[in-house]
Length: 124
Image (cartoon, rainbow, N blue to C red; front, side, top):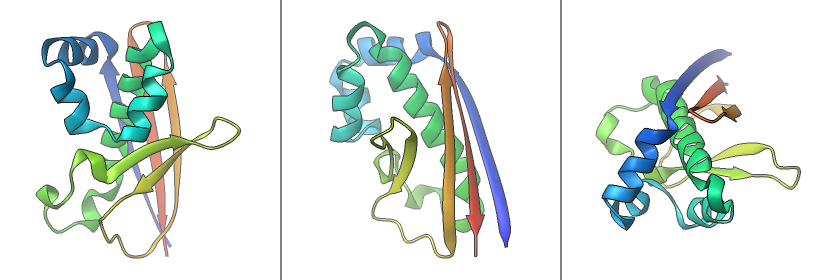
């Protein structure tokens, strides 16, 4: 068994500026419809949730980067960050065949200024 880890931290203000300056273009390029619905439902705290999902996507990408031949073969929307019924985040990989992944564990956190995520992937 092989285990890979990825982590990321981002300033929430950076994500807010990207969303506000590029209007819907940034959101549409980076996030899936389910992620957008989730973040927008958070009203005044939506930027924290967008930033947390951005950090999670980066963390997952870092953890799977050894498994993909070309880093351009995967895009932002191929990694979807959702929540289960208990609110725990999980990863859904869309349209990319990543062989031998046994599990992906994801932890997300955010405060007033920063969002961070850690992804741990175990391979068969």
